[in-house]
Length: 168
Image 1 (cartoon, rainbow, N blue to C red):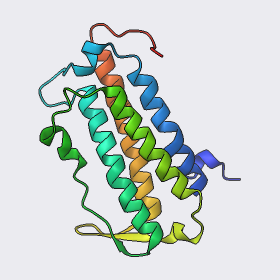
Image 2: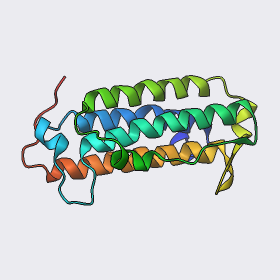
Image 3: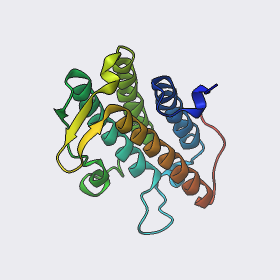
């Protein structure tokens, strides 16, 4: 018997992961003090606010691409540029909580779209460089990015000198 947690190709597993991983990210973010949100342990790494800016930008791109794939098999999907956002936009003055809120809002919209998917699970998008990208693979890549963000936040939190308790 295959369990839900053992089968990442199962649409229910993907929806569950897409719903729960953002909560993990929020739980980690709540542990940061204000200074720690903007701290950068080394010159190469984003700080927590920039990471949340990247996540919010990524989510907007993903929503457009997923909606296109659901609507039409073989739809053209955009090149993802969110990784450039922290360098192109100044997230320093933005609230990590507002960026998290935007990330959640767009993710909920994406999850709502997935609730009505049936045979569309077999759809794919056409990426300018990667070619045909199946919807299931695209969604798994989103969960991978969420996991990577939670690992990065954990590392940033550990590197901060004064983590504070949960804030709500």
